[in-house]
Image 1 (cartoon, rainbow, N blue to C red):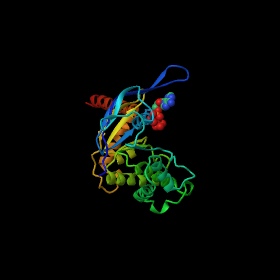
Image 2: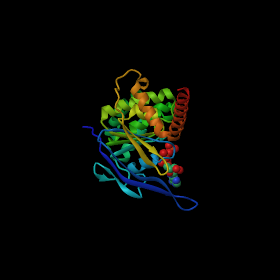
Image 3: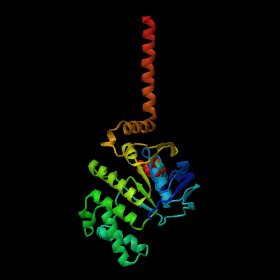
Image 4: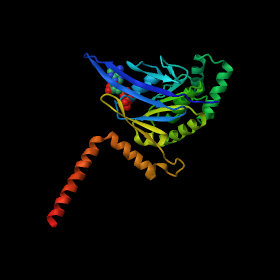
Length: 278
Ligand SMILES: Nc1ncnc2c1ncn2[C@@H]1O[C@H](COP(=O)(O)OP(=O)(O)OP(=O)(O)O)[C@@H](O)[C@H]1O
């Protein structure tokens, strides 16, 4: 049975040393929980620490303070319980699609016959059953990213970490892969932590969206995405538009403040006109 793991991020901080001396605090005291099988999206402006946080969950780097637990086990480095997909496909150009998937399995000691069977299964899952013998340069950007997803899933991690995986793709391919990711998530029951700049993508994919801000990187809102996903043209529904606007306001507090000044200014001048008129 496929099953996602729970993730606990507790009081995590991370700083980097700067060339000119001193340290830059990329994350300050970040805490949140992810339920087993949940699709969580982290959204925030450039530089707010999204990649730093995902790398810490993957164990590619270690926190200065706090702890990260996967099913109650502290993260001490990369592990087979987590798979990661990066923005750039990171496929070996000299290996076929199938070879790229099998390579990761070989490194993990999976026997040859099982490697081939698993590669075929995951190529099928990402709808590329007929493309296993193609090399990366013979595949479109969207196909390469699907291979990267198949590769990450092939060793059956409980958690799938996705770092802006569709940012380099055209809008149409991006929407298609968003739908495929949701399908794969429903089919596999993995816990997914997905990071993006795009508010639209966050609301479309997430069951829950954590909004981050910079200086230092922190979580400023935790928003449940409670919408009817069966709706036609989901992005055009009032619920979707309202959620997108709510998150947009968190991204742009200065724009919201400016709008308030204008609105209140209008109100005040209307009030004074009314009082003059009476
Ligand atoms: N190795 C490093 N040394 C110094 N500063 C770093 C290092 N890595 C990241 N930073 C800084 O930490 C902050 C967070 O970076 P991070 O890549 O996590 O942000 P992000 O939200 O993923 O940004 P983007 O959306 O642009 O990818 C940034 O200000 C960045 O400049």
